[in-house]
Amino acid sequence: MKYKRILLKLSGESLMGGQPYGLSTDVLASYARQIRAVAESGVQLAIVIGGGNIFRGLSGVNRGFDRVKGDQMGMLATIINSLALQSALESEGVKARVLTSIRMEPIGEYYSKARALECMRAGEVVIVGGGTSNPFFSTDTASALRGVEVEADVMLKGTRVDGVYTADPEKDPAAVRFDEISFDEVYARGLKVMDLTAFTLCKENRLPVIVFDMDTEGNLGKVVAGEKIGTLVHE
Ligand code: UDP
Image (cartoon, rainbow, N blue to C red; front, side, top):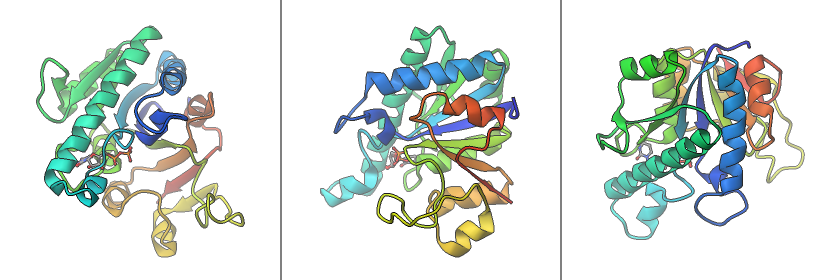
């Protein structure tokens, strides 16, 4: 395997599968199988999951919710997703531990870098729920932060799109995918890989990011093995 320790970001929205809301057990099972295969090869995994399938702070604002409370609701949504993935992993026979950025024992232990590393070194898959614990941030930023903290070799951003394109491929059929691209070029072209807070954290700490399609089963293993699928964003 090319990478020894990875930070995997899963979007909450992907967990819906074909449904309009909530959790698809098929998607969870597919993710769990892919994660098991990678974990069994000895790769250390920390995972951060979004909450967009349940609640996003910003969309709450449009419906009259206070932003801070909306963001807190979003962070709680990431915990729900973390528990769902933990359960799916355990069904696959994978030891998985939920650490939370917000104290909420016994649902999960309070996150610290030391605890995360201890669990990963003991062969457990670590899921960090609760985002950064702060409003006005995203789970992409939480992923970048945890990735830098646990000294991951790479941040893998698993999405429905198979990489970074010159334009939004769902709107522009002429859009072309990059195999690799520098942080500076992403910025100069105004491409939306992640929000700028997350992006800057990765750039400033030299954490490479690979954007890939996690919904095609087997892709996670390929990316970790170093196969050139998706788009590598690097220095
Ligand atoms: N959130 C937050 N702080 C964080 C991480 C997440 O306030 O550090 C909230 C925010 O409201 C966000 C929601 O949690 O909209 C769900 O996360 P995100 O939108 O990143 O999920 P995804 O798009 O990956 O499903």
